[in-house]
Image 1: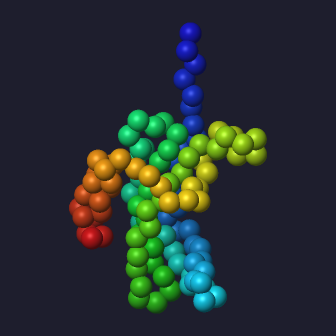
Image 2: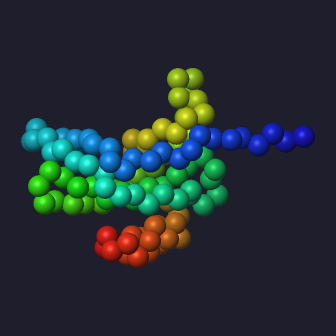
Length: 106
């Protein structure tokens, strides 16, 4: 008998605030105003996100990021924000950018 893993609900970051630090020391505050989320093809433990970020002022940018299921004891079984640049299949990239076009982000 095979036991199926169940994971927590996917993270929803809309409305969350953060800050970006620039190499020259400047700090810009931002709010996540929208996001597109999809599981990576062939993986039950990785979610690909495209987030629409609104900085204080007029600037708006997109962030491609990911979450994975943690493996270390403190975060085991929880969604953890990926701290490195993500690799993803070309078809997943196309699907997420197609959805961004449908929403008028690009």
